Image (cartoon, rainbow over the protein chains, first blue to last red):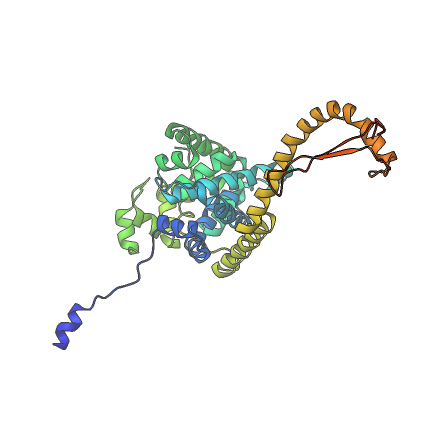
Length: 205
Length: 166
């Protein structure tokens, strides 16, 4: 009998609410649910910000700003659409604005201070250090427009399909492909000029 | 995550294989291998996955929540919620103000016409005592009948010697 009873007891495992359910709970006034959402999305949002902005501290500030904007605009979210698409749109808008403002503040000369490496450096061969590649990327991507860089990051580093990027940015898929093509071309030119050892490897597709 | 052997067997230039990309972004040796085989992997190798913000996720989240609470409090302070009694009071005040605004100009329009006619008696009333005494042996007093306790009482005095302007 005891065994029989045990079978009848439901084993209810706590099920994590999905993004849409969490948003609804937040709209109903549950601040703890918002904390849960922030915790869930922090790493992704920060990674995207970092890759677009290229500086950990600025990326952290911008990510926090994104979440605050998210809190203030949550009423505008339409549950018909994927939450991540809406969130990524907010991330890209804030990050692009930040880059534009930073670019207008900075002296254009600053970004071109790195001297071209000597041929001896190039002859020594390329050691694939992930950190070094990150520096190279941040350096050569500084010539891209904020939108080009955002598209490049989302496609090549976040592995998002062009169709999804188009949805996030509110443009056509062909526009995404054009931006991507131009971004690669510009980066190839910069690599040639400033990192010839990598330019030999990397080519524009 | 797949093994290095599996990665190298499955790796093809321009791949979008999720498992291959995951391995590429985690393994230094395979990253070098992939970049030499397909230079497009150079920048793809540094992407993907998730990142921890400086200071950790807990500190990040608590910073965000502090700011959210602060902004919510500021919002409430700048737009306090009224109780029903206060709302009623505000509504009554507004209604009175609107009614007053509508009524007052009408009063102003009517008053000048009346004023010209009534200024003179008012002035004389001010200068003359309200009750005057005089003696008469010939006066006739007629009191009009009233229809109730609240009806106005009318008294008529007839006297040949009574001053005309009384």
